[in-house]
Structures are given as C-alpha cells and as structure tokens.
Length: 421
Ligand SMILES: *Cc1c(COP(=O)(O)O)cnc(C)c1O
Image 1 (tube, helix red, strand yellow):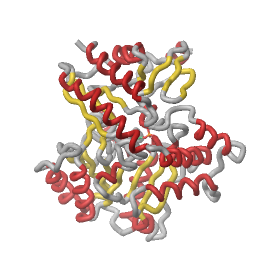
Image 2 (cartoon, rainbow, N blue to C red; image 1 turned 30 degrees about the horizontal axis):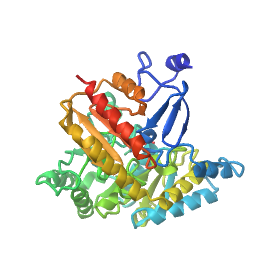
Image 3 (cartoon, rainbow, N blue to C red; image 1 turned 90 degrees about the horizontal axis):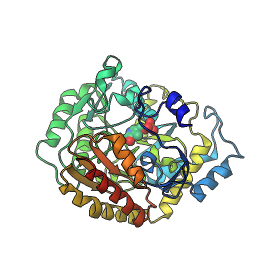
Image 4 (cartoon, rainbow, N blue to C red; image 1 turned 90 degrees about the vertical axis):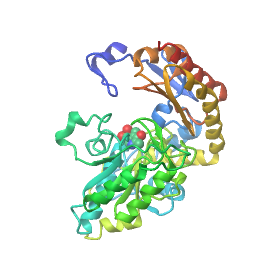
C-alpha cells in the first residue's frame, strides 16, 4: 500500500520525487487515529480544523445513514431539498446578524472564489466595474485556487511562482496589535492609507478575522478588526470575512467576528462546517450585497456540480446541533487553559521564539524552521498526531479531547522541542 501511495498518489504540498513519509491510518474514533499497525495516535490537528467533535461520532454517522437512502445527491439547479434548507436556516440563526443569503460551495477555496465574485459582481451591477481589486493583510491564507491564492500572503503563498496569472491585489502590513491588547499606533494607519488611496478601485477587503491560520497562526487585536470594518464602511468597500478556519467555536466565540462585534458583508465558512465528515463550504451575504448583485438583472455566476450536496448538508446541520447542545464554550475554555499552562512555559525553551494560545489553538513558534520529517516521526513515536510546518508547531484538537489526551499532546510538543538541538 505504501509503495503504491509513494509511486502514484500526490499528497498536500508534496514532492512526487521525494515525498515525505506517510503513516497509513486504518480507522479513527473519538480523538484517536488508529494506524494500520495497531498503534493509536491522539489527534492534535482535528484533520486541519475540521473534526471538532472527534471521529466516528454516532450522531453524525446517523445523520448520514438517515440521508443516504433518501438521496445521496441531486443537482441544485432547478431542484431544492430539505437538508439544504434546514442547514441554511441553522446557519442564519447563528451567524452575525445581517447575513441573509447562503451559497453552498464544495470547498473552502471555492467559497472564497464565490465571495470574490459576489464582491466584483456587486460593484459591476452598481455601474462601477473599476472596483475590482482586493485589499488584504499580510500573513493571510484563503485557499489554493487562483482567486483565493492571489489574496494569500505573497511570500508564504508563493506568489512568485504564479505571478503572471495572479490578480494583483493590495497588501497592508500584518497587524502588530495582538489579540487581547489595544490597537498599537500605526497599525490601522497603514491600512487606512491603502484603503483611502485605492477606494475607487477596491471591491472588497478580505481577511481572516482575529486568527490568521495557515499563513502564520497569528492572533490579532479585535480593535484592529473593528477599525478595519469601520474603514470599509467609511470608504465604500465591502468586507469579506474568511471564517473557514475560525468558524464554529475554535477561537472561543462561535465566529471570530464576534470578538469585534462586527458583521461582514460576505462571510466564508467551511472546514468544521460538517464536523469533518464531508467537504462543504458556504458563502453568506447580506441582503444589500445579494440585491446589489441582481440590481442590473445580473445572476451570480457560479454553480458547482455538487452544490448543496444533501449528505454534506445533512451532516453539517447535525454537527451544528451537536455543537450547540454541547458545553462547547466550557470545553474550549478548558482546552485554552490547559494549553496556556502546558505550552506557556515552553516560551523559555532555547528553540522557541514565542508561544501563543487562543481558544482551542496552541502555537509554538520556533526560532528556526523545524525538520518536519524528523519531528513528525518523533510525535508519532510519542503517540501524538501533530503536523508542524515552517517555524510552527501547533495544536488544535477536537473540542471533545480529554485532559489526559491533551496532556499527551503537550508533552509530545515539549519533548519534540528538546530534539531540536
Ligand atoms: C483551509 C482554509 C481555506 C481553504 O479551504 P479548502 O477547503 O482547503 O479549500 C480558506 N481559508 C482559510 C482561512 C482556511 O483556513
């Protein structure tokens, strides 16, 4: 199996010539992955922010089992169905007030593409087609498709490889003001200078509220986010909040926008939307944006084949119910406290530049890029599934993780740092 995989299957961000080692996983349940050789690993990744309830959850399994005999899929053009409507209602009940229209896409990146199209089409329909650029902040990550990639950090998003075909957007500096701290002088001014100078050509600002994920795991001040939202209104630029990673409680609030009390014009959701079961994302818009797009009789020009897939919608609705019925705030707060207590002292480790914790996210930033293959193997030997990248070793476990399991992950991180001479 491993031979075929190595010879024929691409993995994320991988070389086909010299791929990093992969571990075959046979099954997963609760917060553990069971490898083909019988070893169990405690999951510190939630399969990239998704599996918030852990794996093989009876309620989520049941949602799919109930839906399969009804229909696994039907096209969404000209048809609708109860799973999509029920999920749409659930989402509108919980997202920041003012978002009213839901587009179901099949992955996070596609939901970002749709968000960008919404913003461009909105201004086109207003007779302002020159408003077609985006402004964002450095250190962001919005997905790997071309439209989304153009808004990723230009350095770690590897723009230089794709420059000729990437839209040229504007990048404000990464906010220095940290989460929980007031706005630092200069932070918002740098952003305002750009939005003021370019408002005539800007369709939207796109950013990850509060938590920048794959672009550097950085947590910034709610005052900065509130300031950006106010400047967007002032200068007539739409605000797209990409909550694909932060949505559904990860930062301690159901949505990270709540930290700043803002409602974006357009909101992207994905990842934990289905509790990690199936690929599904959503782009939500305000009534103003939706009506604006159709003001000239225009149609939103997007329609994925698997739009609003009934299985994905059914499991997503159940996952949201499960989350809301659970003591998720207390669970995330307990994870946050244990991460602070366990990872915090590692800030003194000679290999460590900084430790940051917010909600159910714990980040150890190292001074040098980590030897990914060796460190990954060390974690597996410790019974932990943790996938570091660059200078970041981080934990974002399922909310259902036990203190003992989280303790094992924290211990694995600490001992992994000791291997970095
Ligand atoms: C993962 C992620 C995406 C891309 O989602 P995919 O489902 O991988 O296409 C976009 N934005 C953010 C903030 C993400 O974390």
